[in-house]
Image (tube, rainbow, N blue to C red):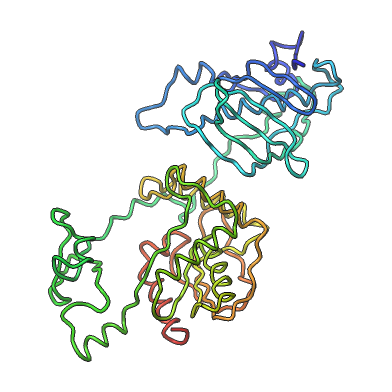
Length: 432
């Protein structure tokens, strides 16, 4: 049954404006909408006002254009004004509701300019949204969409400024959130000789990375030197002493962060795969698991699994990890994501595939609660917080804690040495 706005304003957008929801030309993409039982259908296209402007040379390229995605949800607003089963719009309807929270968002196809929209019942009484292109191929899905009613601010003739949802204001920028210039990458070198695995991997011919035979050969401009464990040209007591000052480190990659790579289907599948990878990477010697941010959840969950299998780690290190299920976790995620996007020119962590994977991992751990571990745990807290975020709440399980310089990001960038030393000293004082 078509959703109509006959005789009111100038079509559906005139009717929505009459009820307090005004869309400009760039957001008027809904061409038609229908209701069938509990399901809504819509035909939407990227408005000509957006297509005509085109992306600027240095502007963003959208995976799914926000104006198109927004238009895909306009049928929900129009449906809120339907007063009966006639499909006609009238004042006796329930009123306008707007999107408030999204869960389980997946993008399957990029660069689409026209969508077929289906909105149906989702989990826990929420709405589920499916977007397809003109051939019916999936473009994006939203597992659950929470709506909130739009408060009425007065009659339809209210002033468009005083009746608006948002207003413009000037807020002084504090020193802590001022734009920081990109941090220049430190010059680095490698200890060893040509033909060894470390040198051939990190300093292949033509790379420009300097190679030094021993520590004494390193020149002053080199700020970081990657060394094998133990370093070359050390023998006897010096070799043993050098080996005691260094720790072998292996990075276990989380699946789903590369373009086109599937996310783990379940939390158990993720933990099983990571436990196998950890045991393979640490075949000998004591094992310490370290995870930063949500990676701390993975480290803790893998530690639980290893303990249950009789291969308990010597320790677990959580680097500025927010407790799962904490009430302010959404606010923290929003603030951190904003900071990642702001820093996208410096780092590759804010690409669409990685952000989508981050959201997927939050879904995997949505119902997870960490269990106490037999091994000691160190919580490394950042002294500063990203703009708009609160400090990470206390980790509720038994742990030692140390605070280091920097925020959630810089503690592992310009303050990485301080963070590494804090962890190294704690490990040397007891666990390993």
